[in-house]
Length: 469
Image (cartoon, rainbow, N blue to C red):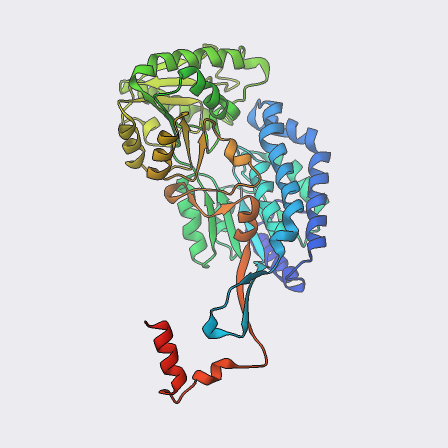
């Protein structure tokens, strides 16, 4: 499989896959399961190579984080799809109003065709193969365009795909921003993009030229709200790993914390204590590097911008290593909206703390800002929980946890507004990559002819009296 084609080649590759799809536009359940089993087998076969490749791409990435946050969720998604595919594919009966009897209504879930998958660098395995699982379960072909920032990982994923699928089932192409722009403008039957909001807008604009439907998994500033009723120790324990995994380079990482003003000092101390317990030495291999020098410089620049504009920083470790790009969790107090860290998704181990006086003030703070991909609430009070759930919008929510909702195989995942559109994972992923086709069937007896012109007959008066009362 050639995974570095020219722009012309990728266009021809799409055409070839579309033609192959038309030869079998409704793959049998058995074939889909065989493909998913082959993907799982190949993924596990290359597991150790993937771990090393991801670490090489990052400079240093925790092997356990790759296993737990990239490979394990992909395997779980495959197993869930295999287990439930039969029920997902079933024809769904729908009711028929008395007026239209005797007919039958049903819905069938038909594969769309060829799915374009544009994946990012932060979780290069899960965010490439996760959408592929849903696309294959729904009976489609697919082309994956991974990030150019993970070349070692891309090479192994290409090997996995080549072993699990034929060249007329799934393809992988690499390339830079020019290739990504070309890819998003191709006439796919559906396009899924995971990445920043800014790039997501460009992808959607390009896809619109072909009226290609899109699923956008973006990001935004996901808030964490600490309730008055819980201790700082409890909140930090439940939040810490969701922020620190992959050094904060996670689209659903807590982006800022809304904390009762009387708990801020305690919160700061708890972050320091618990971070030291989890990562006593940043060089021990459990903590991941920032992906590249460009992202590292961006984070350092944003940190300095915040300090220059009045923020107070509290680093959880002092051994910041410029060469290895290991950046410890750093809290920011006294923040304001003029700072980059309060305007943009941070996507790294910086964490602003915003004090609030009462819950309504915290809710208003969230409401006044773009709707995020995730929202985290730390409370044992059901009233507080319900109030926040009903009055705020976000793609997903965790109560007393952080980020774990993404890897629940029976929960959909997606954003709302600026944080994205559409869902995948679980049954919703199957639906996203399917055409939901309503089918009406009328038998030998045609009751509709009774209501045909000329109008004014008894049946018309009966219908009007029955339906328009």
